[in-house]
Length: 65
Image (cartoon, rainbow, N blue to C red; front, side, top):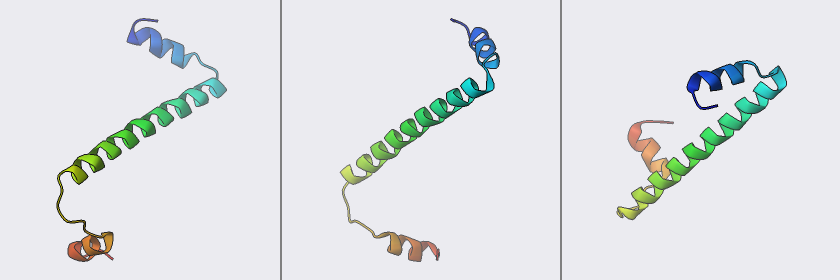
């Protein structure tokens, strides 16, 4: 399989159970990428320095309950 069309056709021809496994795999990979991005953003934020602000302070400042 080398083209998008070939890949699409292969996915469409999967039995329901195999398609479900593929969907779960894609969701897992997406979650891993999102987690890595969140960690990188948090590390970059911490590297900037500055005071640590508690979540309670942020909520109060934003008017959140």
